[in-house]
Image (cartoon, rainbow, N blue to C red; front, side, top):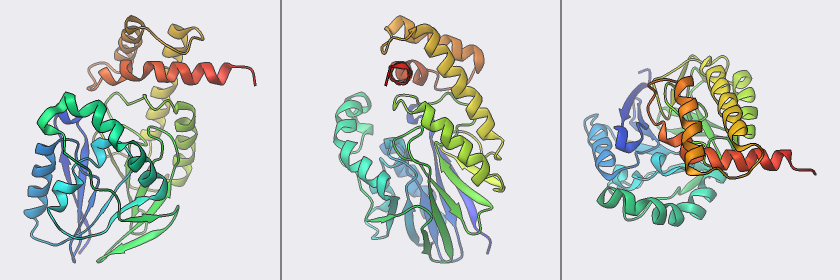
Length: 277
């Protein structure tokens, strides 16, 4: 049978994140897992309804809204949990800090612990899980510290994590917008022939979504640069001004609060880029 992609989309409190179940003849492969416990349990229920074995879990990048509830998805199943080596290292290095930062905000919805990868891959390495084959393409730092695109089969379908968003504001707080723009340039060439891109946030898209993401990032850098005027830090009011500017650019789009939360990180990035060598 041809693979079937099932999408679980979390609500606003779960950052509208997408998690995927790829159904093959032999079983199911999950791509990422939601942020919140209630969504993680619902994602497991969605998997159970398919009545096929779980073959493995693939992780796109090291932000908790993409790996936080792998434990709930597994529910004791002993299967490969696979990530690029850089993604795995970043998750292990930062998970405790993210738990301390975000756990109190989400309370009982935040898992007590995380399940890390038990298998890592290198760039362009393929893995076979039942009749499903995926290839990892490493795009390095961009929206996160390390972004992996997982190509399904011969590459007509790709799961791109947060390499591009579709119809939502974006997370900027890792401060890698220049590297992200470079990654988008690579993605337009490398993924130009892919028919369907499954994103971490927003509806499935075609490769033209990369041009949209480039324009958004260029606008965000311009808005933040003008407000910061070379300074590496914005006040709360200045961050709100940036968020308002981006709201004018993408009116009505959800997750606008992410812009203000990440504005100072981009200001610091721009200031460092402008500093004398």
